[in-house]
Length: 498
Image (cartoon, rainbow, N blue to C red):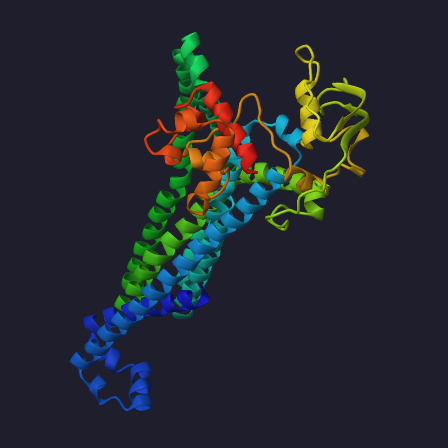
């Protein structure tokens, strides 16, 4: 970035030199700087006006080409760095969410978690990348103004004071509005995503209850105010650019008029200075505008980043994340050597948002090979008992023993390798039947023969052969192309696969 800023300044200086050489080459040829260069490199071709203009032309071409090449490289690496930041924090969030206890997920809206991971862009492209752009543009403006100050100190100081104070005043005036509007925009987007998720995931109930219009109206009531907020946000974001551009060029024109009317300068010097001021304004003003725009973008991202930081804090606070992460665990766990029984010993459990115990002092023993059924009224805790048995929930008191080992978080991965689970409402995602059976595996790595074996054990042959592409047939989102019983058998095959 520093090298790019220096090249940018050198390129602008070459443009000013070229303008002076074309306007009054004789004066330029007689300057001590050109005479020093001629003596240094023994350049006889600089003795003529044509030679001077040709050299100035080539100098402009070379410096601008180099400057733009380096600038393109800086842009590439800045964007890549921002995207890398997004990937890094996205990995932390996804790994953290998946590692947090199952009970925590029961108290969260899934749409909020999806939004949190999607909002990683506010950390990368909308915060870190704008910060890099602020540094890049500030560095370029600083070097340009320093060069301009050496050539025209009075004019430079006046321009710097006027533009700097104007930029500070504009930013101070609008920053509070930007913060307030960005927070409102975030809240509306959260509500809109929740409404869409509810309508799409519950489409069957929406159709049966004929409430399509209700969901559409709820959506419209939120997107229309959001549209207004986004319009105001862009208005405030774009205003500094227009105001500074107007002030900058007014200052430029006044400086040139003062130099020509009251200053004792040659035409070549005035032209060169004018060209330098013009090209500096041409590059510095957009740079200042980009600085303000980047600050605005970063400030707009702060409410989203605050939301992300809350999740990071939660993830870091979870002791299991600090001790062991999902990524660090081996992909293949050694199965647990289960040979005797499963024993519940005075197990009690209550959910985080309810002090009442769902299960109280429950004790029983299941021998290996024994088949049991759990019977009870609705809300008696049957599903909770199964979740405790699987290890998704942790008892508030008491212990669960597999043979002689207490079922702890450390033992859980080994226990799950020999455990199958088929829920009342199995999760079927939009993919092929084989992908749903070999849950989570890439299609190219799926063992087709193993999938067919699991499907046969789950009594799926009667409908698999009717599918267009057998086990590679798409079964639709939530298994919409299968009946409820067929979806259950897909879940059984998945449990057998594990």
